Length: 89
Image (cartoon, rainbow, N blue to C red; front, side):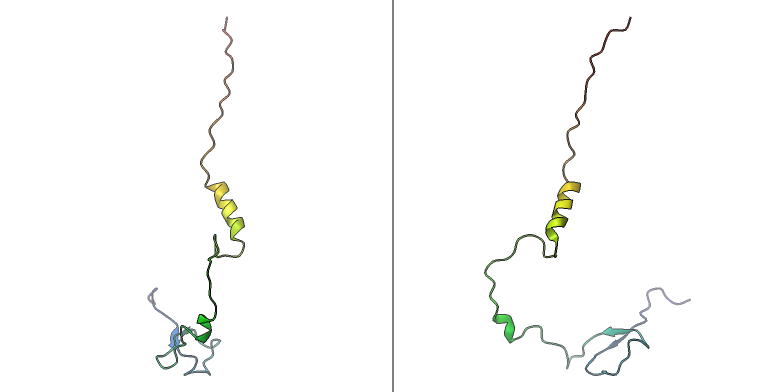
């Protein structure tokens, strides 16, 4: 019986192995030390951001926020009606 935690994918660098076929085998993208993409570029300094948007970073985050406010609000105070009791004979 195979180990449940066994990894069936093999690591590959797309620059070193451009012919690797993900249809024939399970591939796990891992860049080798020579071909690792740069994490920053010349254009990163071109855009300056002076203010940060508030709220969620997701599209439609405002709708999600409204649902959360609805579901996670404090419970309403129970309004108890008291009936006037009539004395029983």
